[in-house]
Image (cartoon, rainbow, N blue to C red; front, top):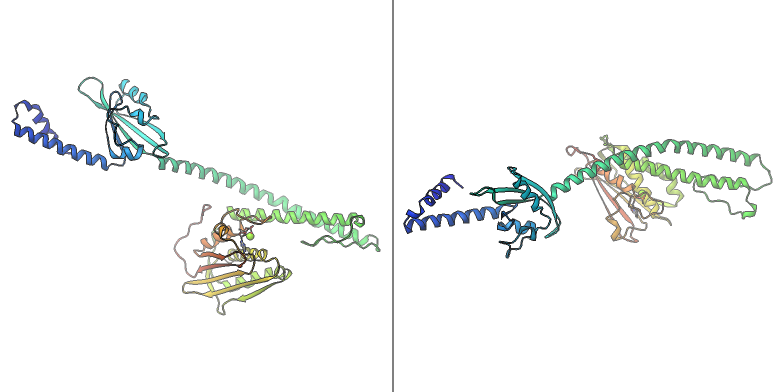
Length: 416
Ligand code: ADP
Ligand code: MG
């Protein structure tokens, strides 16, 4: 809006009584044009603009005022603005004016119609000819997003602080746990000695192996030594479980950036299978080894990829209670290596499959729900991809793809 234009109008208005009808026509036409221009301009603004008189009655409102604060399109003019926006503190606005404070005043209000929003309201007085304000311009700005961001920032700070605390607690638990483990072993040794030095005729069978079941003796025959060994077995099982929880928890909340090197994924698989062979054989599971013949070179952190494989194979074993097949497959792809870990176990139903990578999601009585989340994060940290295919009673297949070359910088945060 040029100053020239308004000065033309001002000049014309100043001598309006001396203008002929043609000139008045021109002035009115110009005014109408200007009004149209202003209206278009105000309707293009995303913030709500409402002009009220000194009593708070609406004189003008733009289109955004309808969209943002829900002013009806009809029946608003001449009505009190607080009728439509009850949370607006009109007293405060008037107070600001009455105290002769210049400039604008601001307030933040909450509205529930047309939807929940936080609105920042800036009010500025329009000076009239006489003393005092002729009215007030109210600017309504949607502050919902910025407020949400502030809250999220506070929330994430809080979560980070808590995570740090939890990590240190978990870490501290590690030491006594280790001591417990060692002392349980010592007790076991002593109990074993007791058995050996005991009555040669007694048929006490000590079962202190992990996962072994107590002997089928009836309770009357159970000796103290047997009972002791049973308790020990339970205690050791629980210590082992606690140890797993603490370890997985620490891995989950303290992601370590991978130390990448061009290594053979087939070798890592070989070592992992070797590591898990006793357990696989114990459960009578058949391993189908379909690794590609050539070296499967990818840019990997071998420890982390081993962790991935261990977690996947453990899950596969747990899904196959009554025998089954574990298939391991690798393939050389254009730009990386693909790895498949497949089982013939219970499978995952349609409604749970999307949750399996989420932290703490587990369907197992003694599960932590962290294994796959760690897997996911490690693969992401490698710039790779992972997905799962399964169906109830159809077995499960995990696909992993690992790049051979660095794919730009990777940022690893606790949030991913
Ligand atoms: P956890 O093993 O402690 O339960 P995971 O993150 O390793 O936690 O797995 C999460 C869930 O995903 C499991 O509880 C199980 O329901 C499902 N799941 C993972 N792998 C398999 C699989 N191979 N077969 C069937 N279900 C699986
Ligand atoms: Mg698991």
